[in-house]
Each structure stands twice: as structure tokens, then as C-alpha cells.
Amino acid sequence: MSNRTNQAPGSLLRRWSGAHPLSLGGFVLVVAGMVVLPLVVTNPFYQNLWTRILIFGLLAMSLDVLLGFTGLLSFMHNSYLGLAAYAAGLFTINVNPESLWLAMLVGVVFTMIIAWPVGWLQVRTGGLAFALLTMAFGMMYYTVAWKWHDVTGGDDGLVAAIEHGLPKVAEEGMVPYLDINLGPWNLGNTSDPVHVYYLVLFIVVVAFILTHRMVNSPLGAVLEAIRENEERASFVGINVRRFKLIGWLVACGLAGLAGTLWMFLERNIAPDTMHAFEGAEVLMMVLLGGMGSLWGPFLGAGIFILLKDCLSSATEHWEIYVGLVVIFLVLFLPKGVAGLSSMLRRKPSENK
Image 1 (cartoon, rainbow, N blue to C red):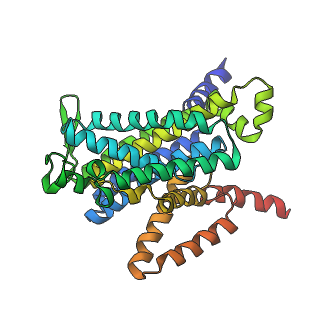
Image 2: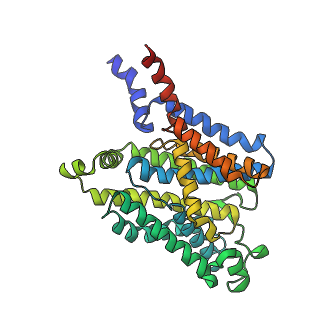
Image 3: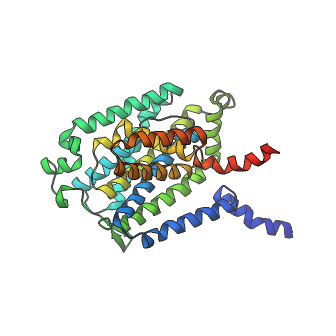
């Protein structure tokens, strides 16, 4: 009886976290550090930089759900960030310039509506064909955003659309600032970079916890079974296409969530954000951080964005040096930064 009582708290904790309690403790410490970060780093530039890292970390995590857990490669996953950002921005400009949460919901739902028929078609293929289809659809989205100037503003983004056709409801021809309300309480406004940072941090933490629970649920086990051996999963009675579609929709929904946060931060979106080069950067973030870990892509996003920021301020040929660093890390850390701890634990046992 006493053993059962002693084991119950740890068991419940593991059920809640889906991992060892120490993992939960580390997660709490990291979140606590992120909460106090704006109080220590008061420069708005760096506050904006950390917000960008969180947003692209969420985008990279959404790709990790698809690639690391389902085994499906999307070359232009960033295009779904762009779709959500456009939807949230256009909704704010034309329909409701006051509700942040409603704009976020519209962006995510619109992205998943677009992603559903695309995913329905893609999951009927596999491997390279699936990856090429993601690139084909991504280029279509990019071309529409680039050519449909009256709605999207073309190369200049929604700023140009507001100035030349859409209602001027925003200051300086941009998407308006929005109040961050929670019921009757006003928690701030998106005009303050600190408020935006805390909004993004809250959404990212909630999204991470829910995604972590999903991948440690029976659904996550099914997705991993499909990744390991699709034919065997089908043989034991798993509807492979259905679950691949579910994984695809979850990944696109998370990417759409990142897109709405990007809109609140930048107050503009342009087709360049949906370009294939940007998609390659997101893929590099996942590879740098480590596939199948969820938290690894956030590390990868931080490493990549900080490298890009530092090197681009030092030389106009920063792409070369970023590429060399990425090649080095991928060659010597094939499982990404997230796999470094397991490599260090394995080496002593191998040397015995």
C-alpha cells in the first residue's frame, strides 16, 4: 500500500508530461527563464529577435511533427505560415480591426481549410512524390501572393495593398495594432514589443504542451509506426492515409498559428516569406535542432537566426558562412543539437 502511495505522484507526473519528471522540471526552468528575459534584456531590438526565434521555433516544430514523427518531408512548409499571416491580416484590415483572438482563429482555420484538400491529395503518394507535391503547391501559393496585387500587395506585401486599394484602417498604411484582451481584462497592445513577446511566449508554450501530449498519445504512436514502416502499419489495420492526413493537418495548423503571430509582430506579410529559400531555412532549423524531439527545432531556430543575424551584419556573403556552419553541424551532429546529450552518454559505454 505504501509503495503504491509513494509511486503515485511520479506516475501521475509522467502521465501528465509524457516523459520523465526531470524533463518537466527542465521545461519549467526554461519557461521561467524566458519569462524574465525581457526584464533583463530591455533593448527592443533583442526583444524582437527573441520573439522571431519563438515564432520560427514554432514553425520548425510544426515541420518536426510532420518529418520527425510521421516521416513526411515538406519542402515549403513556410508557405502555410504565409497563408495564415495573409488571412489574419486581411481579416483585421477588412472585417474586424479589434479582435486579436478572432484574427488568430481565422488565420489558423483558413490555413487548415486550404491544407485539407492538398493533404488529401498528397497522402495518396509518399516519399519523394509527397515532397515534390509540397514544393509544387508552395510555389503556387507564392505565385498567387506575388501576382494578386490588388489583394496581397504583390512584392511590397499588405502595406501596398492597403495604400492602393484596401481601406486605410491602419497607421502608416500597415495592419493595425491590436489590444491583447482576456475576457474583461486588457493585458496590453501589440504596439509594445514586450507585450507581443509575452503573447508569443504564452501561445508557444501552450502549443508545445498540447503537441507534446499528442505525440506521446496513441495517435503519436500510430504516426511513428507509419514513419518506421508504412506497409507494416497498414498490414496491422492502421488506416495509413487517414493518419498521415491528420499529421499533415496538425503540422499545417501549427504553421498557421506561427503565421498569425508573425502578423502581430511585423504587421505586414510579403511573398518573400513564402519563398522556397525560406522553406529551406526552416528545414535547416529542424535538422540543426534534431528531428523527433519537438524542443530541438526551437534550438535550431535560435542557432540559425542568431548566426544569420550576426554574420549578415559582418559580411554581405553571410550565406556562405551560415552554410559552412550548418554543414559542419549536420556532419558531426547527425541527430542535431538535441541528440548531443545521448551521444555523450553513449561514448563512455562504447569506450569500455
